[in-house]
Every structure is written in structure tokens, then in C-alpha cells.
Image (cartoon, rainbow, N blue to C red; front, side, top):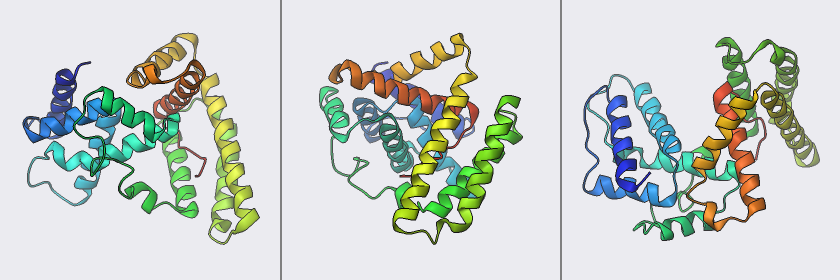
Length: 249
């Protein structure tokens, strides 16, 4: 997808989120979205950032005016930063992609790592466990998990519920032990989730993961790309089933 097509897709998505009200992506807004494309922000990631802004906007009450794409910038970069970390891409690889894409915005205010992340600012272990439990409950309620998940979800939920009561008071080695256990539970849940995919579904997710990483592939060795693709597939599996990230960093 070239830059013009990318901007048109963003414009179309923004129009849909604005209930059909057209807000054109032109002028400075076009430059802004072009910079996302040059940095390698996958289209689905950018749309997720737009969704995040709208969700916060809706919570403020009835909308008074359509949302411009410029308002979504911080959320798009936050979601991109989360995606980048999830698939194991470094800041340097993102900057190299921006340079190769001839982006006019490589650093400064549009750099997700040059400002405090709104996500990082509100993270705490007890709050993280609360969100994980809510996500597991929501996934089960909307039947995104099949019956094979019931046993593992019940056990994971029980462990997390017990950990939630003591997470705030843990320090030092006890806290590190809990964080390591969360990572282990995360791997177990993902392994179970991947096991539910048939060959066709797994192939679709692998292709989608490669598309997300296409802007960075040229600068990655085979082993690094394989690791990033595997992590991207994990993220897509979570998205498909509505699973939380149990691991805490």
C-alpha cells in the first residue's frame, strides 16, 4: 500500500467512526498520516489508535463535533509503540523505516518514545491484574473462547484473583516471582489458543503478521524476522480471541 492509499484508508475509517461525516485528510493532516505510513505503522494499528481516542471521547458524553485525525495522533503512536514492543522491534528499526520512507517526521513530538506513554503512566501491577481478569471474563461472556479453554481460563483466573489481593504489597524477590509467574501463565494461555487454530486460520494469521512487518523486513535478518513474525501472530491470536496479555513488564 502506497502512502496515498494509506491516507485514503485512514480517511475512510475516520469517516466511518464519525458516523459518516467526512473529515478530509489533506494538508498538514496528510503530512501527519503520511509520517505514520513512513514509520511503518500498520493500518490496523493506526485504526486501533483511532478507536482508542473515540472510546475516550465517547466516555466524556454526547459528541459535539466530528473528530479530526490530528486529535488521534497520541493514541495512534501509543498503540504503535505497544505493537512495536510486542513484536520485538527496536526504536532504531522504526527510525530506519521512517528514513527509508522519506518521512519528514523521524523524531520530536511524533516520536512515541520521546514523550511519556499514557499507557505506561497508568500501569501498576494490581491494576494490570484487574484488567486481565476483566478481559478474560469478557472473552468468555462473548463466546470467543471454545469449551476447551474453560479449564485453563478457570485456573488462570483463580491464580490471578489470588495474586490481585497481594500484588500491591509485594516487593523485591516476591514481586519478581509473581511477574515471572504471570509470564508463564501468558505463555500457557497463548499455547492453548494457538492449539485451537486449524491450518487455514494459522496461515491467514501468518500472512497478516508478515504484512504488518513488511515495512521493517528489509532491515531484519531471517532469525529476527522469524521471532517478530511469531510475536505478531501471538498478538493477532489475542486480538482474534479477545485474550489479554497476562505478562507484566
